[in-house]
Length: 390
Ligand code: NAD
Ligand code: MG
Image (tube, rainbow, N blue to C red; front, side, top):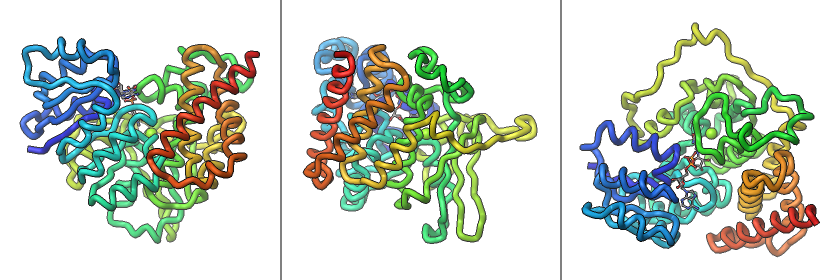
């Protein structure tokens, strides 16, 4: 039996992972499941899957979780330390599907015990790519991409030599506002931004898709995971979300990966890798689809992409700054304190401020430095917003 843990089990990726495991429960021994405020769902899944431990990220919900697990053998734990401890429990395969930089410490811990880490949490590589890859190497751990574009690239690269790769193209649907007049974007609401045309995902990544911050994170993730230069990573807008990524080789060949927009594809690939197994995803009928469209992303519509290019050139802690500023600006947008376009303005202002601090730019990429920088960048976003209000 394979020992598996799922971090962020109550979320969109977590539930899709559980869907796959539920179809063949005898093959898996579930070690840890973690969630946030949805105690009911966490406890229900932990009991059904007979997990050893269930962890809520919220310290003050421990008693609620204990009560929900009463009468079962599942242990209850709470708080960020408990999350990291759960990641140290021996497991063969660990799904990293917490949203945000909070996914980094448990992900690193899982790598330290030599587990295979299935990485949906793109923030891990954006904030600390070289540290994460070094940790995996040192502990003989395997890191598998779960983001659909990165899983697609990984599959297109199977058996290939990286030295023959000229470029990697990841696609973007263009999000909720792809066809909106530019002038209307400033007034876009949280509800409108939370409505993705093709994918059914958590609210935060859905809004990040509308602003293209999601793709900006993914461009950095591509550079880090596959070890290519910033210039080798390209983005194409592809409204149908059927081609997830393409790899261009030095003989001019382009290998594209296609599939229905269903995350169980990428999750299942990482779960069964290096084998392929039957997955409950739609089989594409290309004749019925008729056409696939591609276009260049418009810089004016998607300033996040330009910011990502800057971050890749900078390296070091700038990824952690970029991600934290984005997360905090998104908090403010969701709380309706700032408008849709102000998110990119805030992130740009925080990156400028970071660029002026040479001591931070040259600081080594350690977990402590990443966490401190993350904290600082969030504070800078709050300051930028209160200055504007004042
Ligand atoms: P979600 O919001 O649906 O779920 C997030 C999970 O993380 C929940 O279990 C929540 O309880 C937990 N969580 C939230 N904040 C936390 C914190 N501070 N500490 C600990 N746990 C916390 O998110 P999602 O859409 O499933 O996305 C999860 C990750 O996967 C993100 O990094 C996202 O970018 C990435 N991803 C998602 C999709 C998708 O289709 N949903 C696709 C590609 C990549
Ligand atoms: Mg993606």
